[in-house]
Amino acid sequence: MSKTKFAVGAIIGAVAGIVAGVLTAPKSGKETRADIKGKAAELKREAASRAEEIKDQSGQALEDVRGRIDEYKERGQSAIDDAKRDISGKR
Image 1 (cartoon, helix red, strand yellow):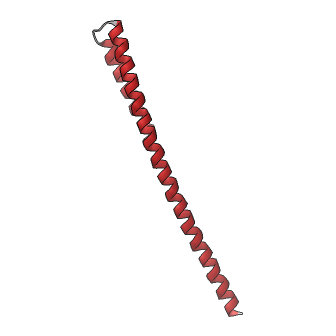
Image 2: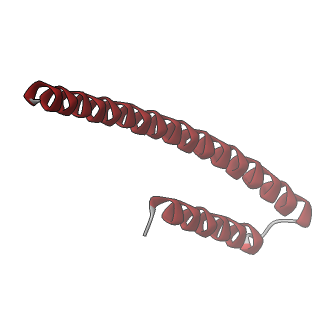
């Protein structure tokens, strides 16, 4: 299972647990709505924070891949140049 699917499942589970806890608590409707609103805001902040972390990680991964591509491109070009020199030197 991918980390993303696990994270989404964990968030859904947390939300379900919070909602169940809030709805079964012996409070007035006004207090319950305030609790739900507060928890929703908290979860929104956490989701935004996690999304920013994932964005940063994916950006770093992209830069790493680009660096490797450039490295392999240089190696390939060097191998081609060496082969050309070998071929032209033997004739």
